[in-house]
Length: 80
Image (cartoon, rainbow, N blue to C red; front, side, top):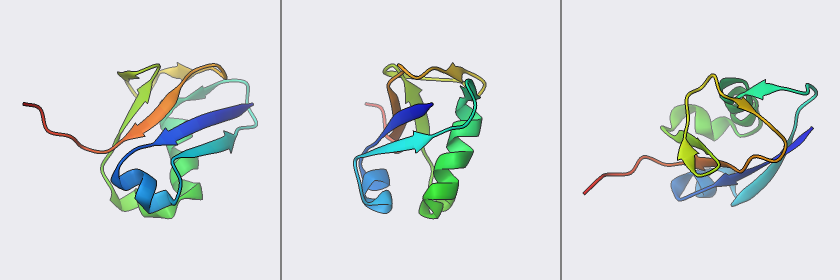
């Protein structure tokens, strides 16, 4: 399964792109498992804080991702 991941702000700068394709070998993957694979591919993220959004909502790490989901890695942001 191929998952398209988008990066925003300083995360995009750290990984060197705004969009990436992550290939996973299983038919199901949780947010935490995907995050581990992304950090393995882009080690600079290991020292950075971020949230993961699926279909434009920040989600729990146990959520199962499907191939059609929109996945985004978001930098910390302040509310106003």
